Image (cartoon, rainbow, N blue to C red; front, side):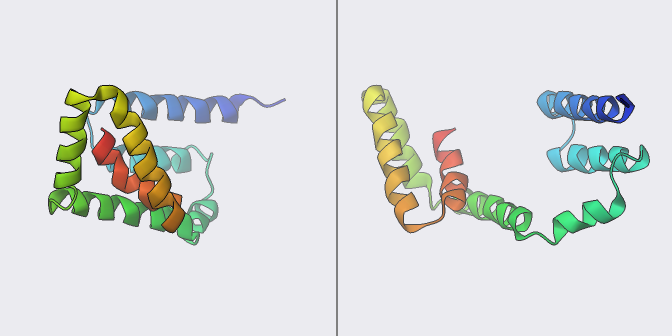
Length: 124
């Protein structure tokens, strides 16, 4: 059994994880660097890498990050964020059910991915 390739891939992922956690470089730099390392080491085929871009899911998730950032920067979520922050100081045990209920209601009308992306800045 050839274990060299899986161990090399795990090594690249471990290094990427460490650099992500250290926050020394921007996340996009680390992701592109990790992909380049996998390509150079021959662990990832260029055709397989390009096939990922033909899938709509990564593009959709990237667009949701942009949407979430835009909602935060324009202040659209500021009022809701302030409500949650003030409520968590006054009634911390009630805020988790409030955010959960907000998520449930939003998920009933919108796909889960955008709901999560928009609520991440609210909860963090």
